[in-house]
Each structure stands twice: as C-alpha cells, then as structure tokens.
Length: 116
Image (tube, rainbow, N blue to C red; front, side, top):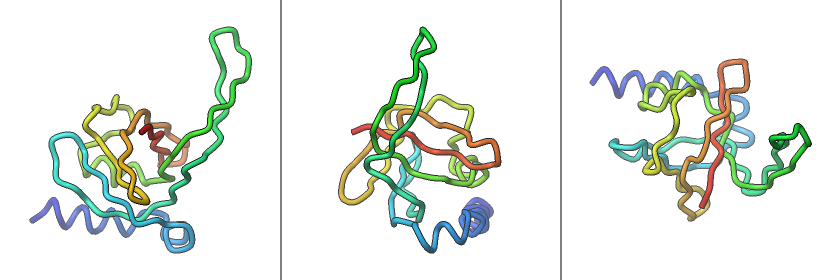
C-alpha cells in the first residue's frame, strides 16, 4: 500500500507542465517488477552529443524518454546511478525499447536513453 501511494505522489511530481504538454503515455517495466504506466516526453529521434575516446564530438540519434523525475524512478527501483538491467523496458508508440543508459540532467531529472 505504501509503495503504490509513493508511486502516485511521485508521479504527480513528474514535471507537471512538461507532462501535460509533451507527455506520451508509455509503460515501463523495471527488471523484476510489474509494468507501470506513466506519461513523459518521448522522442524517437533524439540527437545526443557525446565525445569519443579522442575527445572528438560525435552525434548519435536514437530514442529517449524524459525528463523523468529521478525520485519517481527510485520509487520504481531504478536509480539514476545504476546500470540498467537488460530487462528494464519501455513500451512507447507500440515499440518495445530496452533502457540502455540513464543520463542525469543535474537538476533532479534524468533522460532514459533507449535502444530497440
């Protein structure tokens, strides 16, 4: 009972303005858990800037979910600093994605980097 109340309260903290305007209804299943419905911004073609081993900029295009409040993810058993398990999945727009990486944004939210 306390866990579901926590999830409900935490879900209400998920950037309400962002969720209302840009939120997509998705389902996330954290490794070993039950599917949870949530609404968060989803971008199937997000452009991410990274650097290679030589310090050269590299662009990567792929799906992301977020920003998602890190308190909400912790309540689901997925911490921002944890390496995601292969079984942690997100279903968005009818496609199942694996959570490949978790990138904190420095202000309490994270981007979930997804892979098919």
